Each structure stands twice: as C-alpha cells, then as structure tokens.
Image 1 (cartoon, one colour):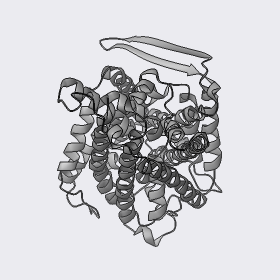
Image 2: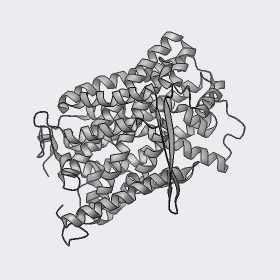
Image 3: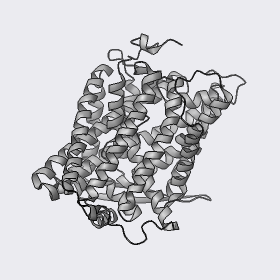
Image 4: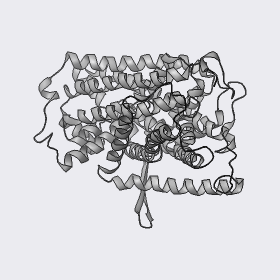
Length: 488
C-alpha cells in the first residue's frame, strides 16, 4: 500500500488536502452542533435532576470505547466511506461483507439525512428565541400503520415557519459544499473558532456565577439504583450519544486526509477528549445558574429548550442572551456543514465499489467531489425537516445502533480473529474490553428506556426493505448469493 502522506491525490481523483488540525476541527464542529445546547433539558428530564451529568459522563465513556473501534479500523483501512469499507472487509467483500456493507449504506440513506435534519430543526428552534412566531404550528399529523406481529408504526410530521427555515438551511449548506475540498478545509477552521468561542463564553459565565448549592441540588433518591433510575439513564444516554456523535466523521473522509494511518486515530480521539471535557463543564455551569426544575418543565412541555439563551439572560441580561443565541445558531450550522460533507462520501465509496447505485460514483469534473451523493443526501435531509426534533433524534440513534455500530463493534473482534496479519498502525487499547463495553452500552440504550419498541420497528422495516432490494439487485446482477463468484 502506498503511504498516503506521499501523495496529494488518490487513484479515484479525490484530493488529500486535510491535515490533523483540519480533521480534528471538522470532528469537533460535527459533534458540537445544536445538540448539547437544545437537548440539555431532555437529559435532565430523563434523569429527573442534576444527576443527569451521569448521562453525559456515560456518553463520553461510550464514545471513547466505540471511538477506539473506529480508530483501529480507520488506521488499518484508510479510505473514503469509513464504516462501509470496514464492514465489507471484515465480513468478506465477496459474500456476507457485500450484504452487510450494502445494508449499512441503505440505512445511511435514512440516518444520515435524519442527522443533518436534526441539526437544521434544532437551529430553527434556537432562532425561535428571536422570532417566537417560528414555533407557530400550521399543520401536524400522526399516521399509524399496523404491522403484522409488530404492533403499530407511527410517523408524525409538522409544518411551522421554523420548518421552512430548516429546509432553507439544508439548501444553503449544499450551496456552500459545492466546491473544492481544500477551500472547505479553510472554512472548517473558521467555523471551529466560532464553536470554541461560544462554549468558552458559556463556561466563563458559569464559572464566574457558580452556585454550588443549585448545581448539586439532588432530589431525594437521586442515586437509588432502581428500575426507574436505569430507565432514566437509558433515555439520557440515548440523547447524550446523539450529542457525542461525530467523532467518527473523519473516517468517512479517509480518502481526503493526509497521512490517514496516523491522523485518523489522533483526530478521532482528540476530538472526543476535548468535546467530553467541554460538555461536562458546560452542563455543570448551566446547572449552577438555572434550577434544574425549570429545565424539567421545559422538557415536559417541549418548549423553551433554548436553555443557553435563558442562561445568559440570567447572567448578563438580554443583550448577552441575544448574542449567545446567534453564536449557537452559527455553531449549529457548522455541525450541519460538517455532517453533510462527511456523509456525502459514503454512498460515493459504495457506488465506486459497485455495491450501490452507479450515479453516486460520479465526481464533479471541475471541483473533484462526489456531487450526486452530496445533492441526494441534502435533498432527503430537507424532506426530513418536517419531523419533530425528538422523533428525529430517537429514530436516528436506534437505526444506526442496530444497523451500524453493533455490527461494527462485533466486526472488530471478528477482524482480529480472521485477519490477524493485516497491518494495524493503531491498536485498540486494552483489547477487547472497549469493544465489549461499547456493545453492552448500545444494547442498554436500545432496551432500557420508555417506548423503546417504537424506533425498533423503524429499524426492522428498513432492514427488511434493504434485504429485499439487495436480493433483487444481486439476482439481476448475478452476484452473491446468486453467483458462486462476486464482481466486487
């Protein structure tokens, strides 16, 4: 294999234009979107008090465990597509790996736009602090589809002025990303500075107005290890997992990173470390200013989730609240920008491999980026902006845990056993403990929360549909399992 640091571009025409700093910045702005700013009341509501910090801490530990999985695989298999490439090689590119990697791309056709849309919806929610009319509901509907032996599949949609704003954000992001990767790298560093300035100001304000009695005002029985405690922890961990996600974004861009065998693990683990410290400190500071019962009320009513704006209103007044709202909006947009960039490279890699629709393999003749893949994901994300934020987050997390993260964590162990001679520039620390802990954490989120069956049904439908499409394509193309040899 040729050392990627010795080349400016790879064989598929993508430019290796991102170093460690740019890759880490992209990961961090991906992780720190609108999520931690608007979901904090949801985490407090799930746990019922400031012990919600346990949810953020558990989320950080889970991110590190799964991050070590991605770090080892990213260094061993540095190429565009990330998990698609890993799953294909782990389970065998000519047989099961072809099916599992296809299912990964298929679920990504839903989960990636959901992730992008959730950022856009959250951004519009924060903009409602300026213009409360954005929350005015013009239309909403919930449809229930009965499923044999599985209950009812519910789908809700809503139309507000904020919905239109979220769609506009998706389209504007596509416009910005429709250019050369080296220009995007410079833009990502500028956005990173805005993200760090926002969180730095929040932490400074909290530390200078810290009220320990308010921050640690635990309700009676807060740490009683009851069934309710673990159910609440499962709900909190689901939201925290969503807020930490993005640490693996660098793996999707493996074909555009300088010296990927070194920079992918470094960027991934550095971003988790920095963001975990920032999240824990920021949440503690906000709890020291705003009583947790107020956030609990906001979570129960799904209104006033712009907790950082209210935080600054208490500390400095209305001018600070309006300014920090603007900074959060910029931060949220930076995350949408990074998500759309990273995800657009995955269907491209699969199509290039012959395991997805051919159109996604097209590279722009001038700017050298996969423009069809970018446009497709962006437009589907715009359609998902009509969902409620809470529903989008839950569906996204469950679908991806079942159809990506679990099979990838198990896959690392399989890869170690079946392919022991593959060069591994980075090896998981304390192997296989982090992989096993990641698997246990994912299963805990799936089955230890209220109404867990709802999103499981979504994942089941997507899995069945993906299997059906794969079998039809394989039968028509005479590939595995309908041919003894694969064309992969």
